[in-house]
Image (cartoon, rainbow, N blue to C red; front, side, top):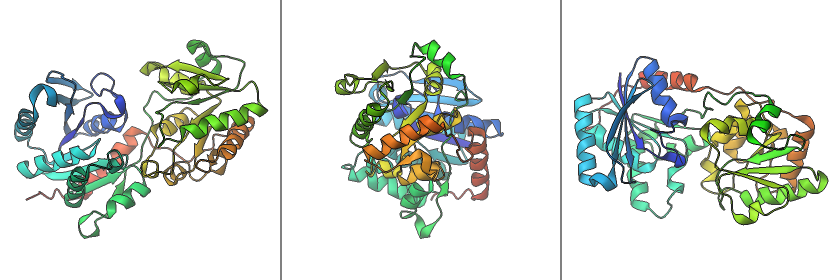
Length: 362
């Protein structure tokens, strides 16, 4: 089949052309490996030039709204779709690409599919017109997939005639594999003789990161040698806390080393609309590296970890999270449920596409 993906070029602050990763890259590439003809139309807003490239058996294009303006951007995507004549148009990466995919599918009389890895409406709760356009696309799509059952249940409410929303899980990128911990620490200049826990992710009230710092202080009172490794750009007060090691932004090729260097990987989410629909990729990466994970027990995270109690603490419970960390430092537990790989996820999606008739939108 001919599959046309439509999404943003920089999801989660990563450039899919220069720094390919995640379901946005591997799902199209693995579907191409299964024999589909795949094109991906990406959109950006950073004054970038229009560009085309071939990568992983997929044809990639990028159009920038600041460079072209809305009308020219839509015209170029329409022209590319008309030339390609896709069987399916697949919206990925954000709510506006559900609207755009629906528009293309109608114009090309193609079938519409949508894939959601988060609750996109939680990104901009004030943008009600965009929410309405997203829900209309969810209603009309022939196939809708979500990263887990909780998000699937949320999207199901907007489906036409109660149509099913299928679960298409997250997976770790292939470079995340078990590694020798001491060698990873040496490569990154991290302490070799201290227990290290780490958080790799964004900061904010919807992430639960304040609780993480509180839990670290509690755990360190019992284990003074304990260190907390933080990547990216955490706030100054976090970096100033005793025992915290800031490593800044880590190069993509070193991220698997950083995860594998940890004694415990910390995955924290909050009981917010965003948290209740979030399936952290960092959890998949730590699991793939066989690193013990201490996680806050939102329903999506419980599902991802198969409700393994040794890895879970109640949301916003700093003492409970500290106990979880200390327990994992002692046990080294990494007894996770089976995790899918991107080739396996693509095979699941291939079955879903073939199972659903390519119902053309009017």
